[in-house]
Image 1 (cartoon, rainbow, N blue to C red):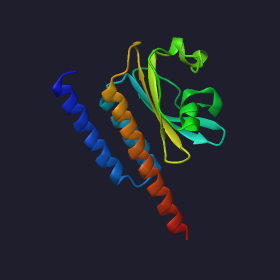
Image 2 (image 1 turned 180 degrees about the horizontal axis):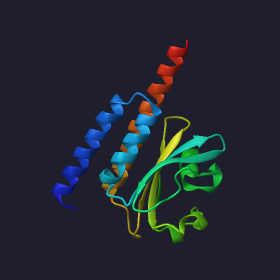
Image 3 (image 1 turned 135 degrees about the vertical axis):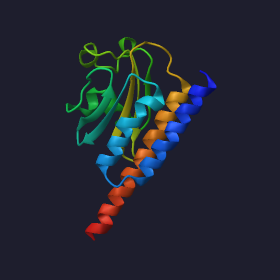
Image 4 (image 1 turned 90 degrees about the vertical axis):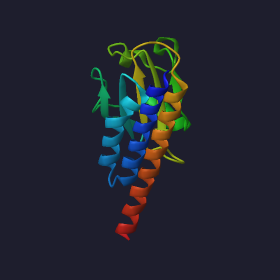
Length: 169
């Protein structure tokens, strides 16, 4: 990867981090992730997924073709739910070779490889996924940046929840 591409990615990451720091609502956080993550990660698609009890809800996406926006799945049967329950990033260079992937949900999409990072400290409240249309090892830079986006969003989720609790008091 050239230095120009790397510089651009980190410049975009800085802008996203600054925007997350100014976010005042969950909707703003989700909008920032949707609008910036794909360019930062150089992926073909991104999704943002919220945890709703024992379900996950795909609340937003930016992708070359439709994925699962608006759909809900049991937390135990999808990779986003697994990332939240296990509290760590899941990296899948080839969806067809990984038994964690529910192929029936993926085969009609462009997705060939993916990474999913949980959002939230302690008990994750959401996840952000990045998808590529080719099977290949996922770049280390993309994984570091995905983790940073998830951590930045998690900090803002907590801040907004804390502010809401203080306002309600």
